[in-house]
Picture: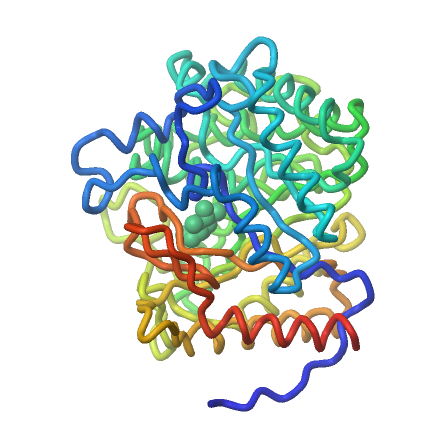
Amino acid sequence: MTAYPPLPPFPAGFHWGTSTSAYQIEGAPTEDGKGVSIWDTFVRRPGVIREAQTGDVACDHYHRTADDIALMSDLGVNAYRFSVAWTRIQPDGTGPANPAGLAFYDRLVDALLEKGITPFPTLFHWDLPQALEDRDGWLARDTAHRFADYAALLAGRLADRVEHWITLNEPFIHLAYGYAFGVHAPGRALMTDAIPVAHHQLLAHGLAVSALRSAGAARVLIANNLTPVWPATDAAEDRAAADAYDALHNRLFTDPILLGRYPDLSAYGTGPDLGGVVRDGDLELIAAPLDGLGVNYYNPTRVAAPGPEHGLPFQDVPIDGVPRSAFDWPVVPDGLRELLVSLADRYGAALPPIHITENGTSADDKVVAGRVADPERIAFLDGHIRALAQAMAAGVDVRGYLTWTLMDNFEWAEGFTQRFGLVHVDHETQARTPKDSYYWLRDRIKEWRSA
Ligand code: BGC
């Protein structure tokens, strides 16, 4: 077994945790008055999900909450990021709250607090109420207002106990996969015509910040998927392609929030009004001060100038010479350091404290005689936590590291074929088996929390 040299101590109160999302773990899609979300609908389209799997049962977390909290408590984490299924709170995305839906998250929060685990609810992890999708989803400005109403209902119930709130999860991935390429719900393939979705999600974020604060929320964050962008070569065309990709993936979702303006999207044929949807006052709302930036990091992205008739101002090129996950994603721990340091350089005093709200890897994990050996995940976590420590030593203010994910779950279009968990889940029996990485992280957290 590899020996891992000790790390410098992390500051007192640093959050060590795991992240999950509602559709990926909960199951119980119609229980206690829950309404239909776009994922409930999308998974039924033929051919979109590997092996035609669905999240109807997922990890059955809705019924096994106590077991899953016990797993976290034994792991020794002091933070848990989960998402709330909007359709449990408002089955159709509008109107009064469903008491049974609120009660589920109320119980979850109390059970976490009882174990000394700080809850980090995310309000939206891609499972829009289908009723709102029927009214044009995030292409409609009204959805942003509906989101703020939902935020107010939820915080009205929980803000007396929940300090940290996350508005959206990865608005870039939702825009790209859900609306531009159509490989995630709601399955629209609009390419660059999807760009207004970015503005409506950001407006929803801005309106929700104010709704959450009015309801007593102390700290509000957003969780963005961010990636260092590397040009394939030093040639001017490749550097221009890297700038264009950086504008779309990173800056589109961070500049308006932290700087109050959109980046230059002219490479996508889009002006500063994002296809005519930005109205006076919107950017002021979107730039409402935040208490933290959630960073979801998986890997860097390498891009080159596109070939003729490519349709986009960049093309992805592989990152060679590094290990790859079961998903075939490049494993580049130092990319996390690079990303964090570049955020601090780019945004300076406008950058709020950072929480790493997702970071993890998939592997082909199997239970053999009651044990799951996952050395790749241990190496991944160790490398990334070291990179994080280096960024902190370089002066970046990071307050927490929440790994993706607690347990193997429904990995969107990949169904159950990609395992990202610290805990193995047998999707036939729901048996949970902590992997070697779970025990490794448990021991490390013990060291770091007591240092
Ligand atoms: C998402 C998670 C997902 C993970 C691994 C992130 O983009 O927020 O829901 O499971 O990546 O693909």
